Structure formats: C-alpha cells, structure tokens
Image 1 (tube, rainbow, N blue to C red):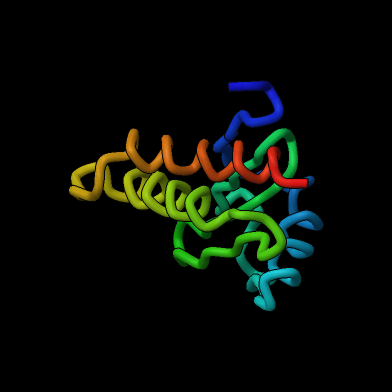
Image 2 (cartoon, helix red, strand yellow):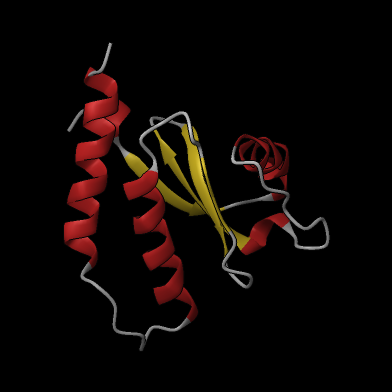
Length: 110
C-alpha cells in the first residue's frame, strides 16, 4: 500500500473543527456546535479528511465526492468498539481491507 493510500484513524482536536464543519456541509449535515471537536473520531486518507463520527452522538459524516462509504463504515465500527469494547460486531480486518480497496480504486480512477 502506498503512503497516499494510508488510512489514519485518530481523535479530532480543536484545530480540526473547521475541517469537520466543511465535511459535514459537503454531506448536507450540521454538526452540533455544543459538541467539542475532541468528541469526534476522524478518518484521513493520504492526509485528507474523508469521514468523521461523533463518539457520544454516533453522528457520521463522510465526503460524498469520494468513495468514502467503506472508510466511513470502518470508522463507525471503530468508534462503536471504542465506546463499548464488549460489543460484538463484524470483524474489523475485513472492513479495513474493503476500505483500503476503495481508497486504491479512488486513486486509480482518472
């Protein structure tokens, strides 16, 4: 996998709030202003924000102009596991493979 195809999952910080708001706008959603930025888990691909999920609210936003569905699903599962590590969900490794294929496909598209 190339560096540009790397999926990074991390907790958002205060500096990420403008990017979160832009992402939500692209997804025709509005993030609650009373929820701090650090309550979001974000997925970046090649350093670009593709999806975010609210840790307490479960609100999921994703870039509709990228093949971000699989990345968003992987992020949702990761956030669910972080909230409740006892929750039994689909296995993350297959989801990660699917997300990586979607990223590779988007990079290969003209």
